[in-house]
Image 1 (cartoon, rainbow, N blue to C red):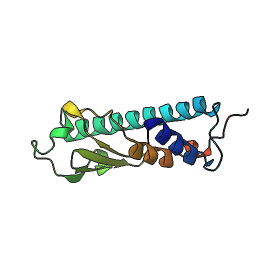
Image 2: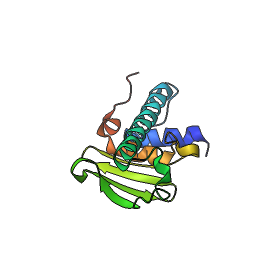
Image 3: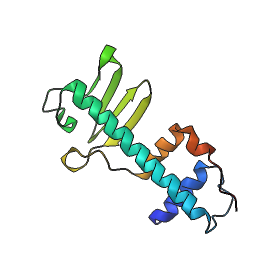
Length: 135
């Protein structure tokens, strides 16, 4: 399955039109939704990583082991930020954010995959409620 097919299938599922054929006119709508999901994911991961930098006092949170930081813990005002390091990534939860990502080269946090984008789509109701464009 190529990347475009995967994107189209995921997008169809997100706006509940799985059994409706994809038409040529749908592609701009699908691409827009896909780009919105990528931007949302990257914004949320950057925000979560910045929280870890600030409250764990790490320049680059990928080096949590070297700094002696616990794999699982709480930080921030009133311990309001829950974090969990796993493998090469991290999950961060606050009252208004839950995001999971893997660190890239040099601690980058802007990489994504379809599984993580799917989680973003399911957590952000507006993606599921968007209607197909009128023809």
